[in-house]
Length: 86
Length: 499
Image 1: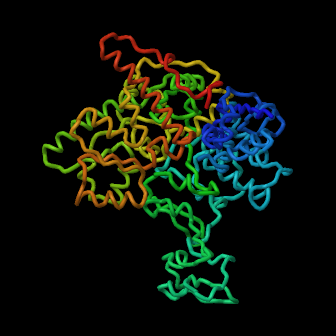
Image 2: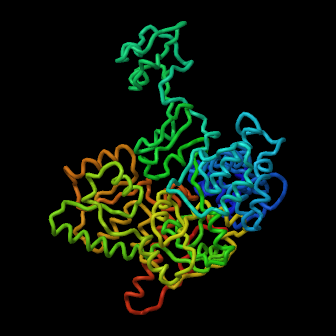
Image 3: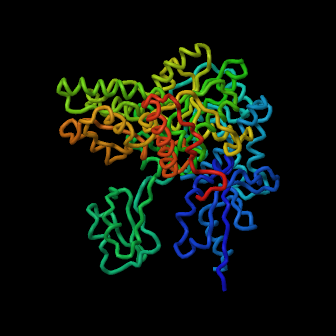
């Protein structure tokens, strides 16, 4: 079976960056070596979720089609692994 | 490292700035504690009411008040807002402890945890020099009246059952300036404090806050005074944004001019090198840098023996302010700063009006909905040399000087912690170099208590800006006179690029 690939889009907009997103800039370094080939991590301009009045708070990250709010390195790793069916 | 206490503080800064922008501070501020801690949300502390009370006092600090100055607990925030707007006097105390938020951590101590197996060996007892441990119900117990916190029992216990519980703010304070009052709440002794800001970062309850100048800055703007920003070199490592975007964003916030303090650093380098040369000729064994105000304050308050070695050269901010004040005699000069101790330098320098921390600057951007990723760059004519920019990181001042004076042998003090203080104190007796660079914060100013970026990322980004600056300077030294456009060497930290 072909390994699933995951696109991680980290919002680098100023709002996310200020509210904890700055730490996510180091996310690639936390990836285990065996997963690195399946995961593409990119920075993104404001994803626009911070304006929604739905109680979700920055920093935002998109993992394929899923939106993660109040993202931390740890919960992002968990979601990525889930997405890879690990 | 960003933590939840910082995120709460930044959220509150953003709310205050939104009100200031709309000129509705007085009418809107009483609502913030309730809006910020709604009844249906789980509380951080014991209950939503405690959270609201703490929020109120954090806001008081943001308005620039000492929490200890509260005379009537019933005074609403709106009253403080009015007082802040009308205030003309400021004190030289730059931070305040929110006693309501201070959890009164237990005095640092060793404790026996429930992992104690009540073993037969009882090495904890035999290792204790003060006979402070006995057994009760089959478990070890420490008698705190006798315990001297030596930690020997912790090392000896085969089950790791003994833990050390620190008081985080006291633990990081390099000068023992913070300690408990009779109620167990931390108090800062202004006679001892060097404004290094380490306690602010260390407190896990976010109970220590800087008194901000935000109200004053907005007041100056409302009085139609020109706002002029002077940005510290460390800004180059913040927000993942190029300096051109930072400059433009400050213009969008209403600053009429933006200067880089790196410009003043050029003067510091020249004077520092000259002074170093003269001192060497006089037979002085070494000189120290003087740009870190927490360090100079430490020398003045705690170690005057080092005074003869501290250079008299002024800080980059000093020279920048001198130049900027000439260009803008009536403007309101604001230093955009990663640092807490610079609040003191700004206070004592009549040429500079106020300080805006990096964190406050970021919150202002969020309040105004400005996204640094989405705006254009705007460049200054002046492009600093890479050496001047280097002042933002540990080792940078020495490197800049060495570039001028290759015979310099540097000693780098990266952070004023207890070990480095011991080293500094020994220098007059024996110093392995002839120039000592001291920065109070680990990593230098990019590790300051007001930074937003992780210092590792900041260091990387600063380096890139220094590379661009170095190319630029090579070109102008070649006499081509054509500055290399910053765009051609974009820093790689944003939109859809691999991280």
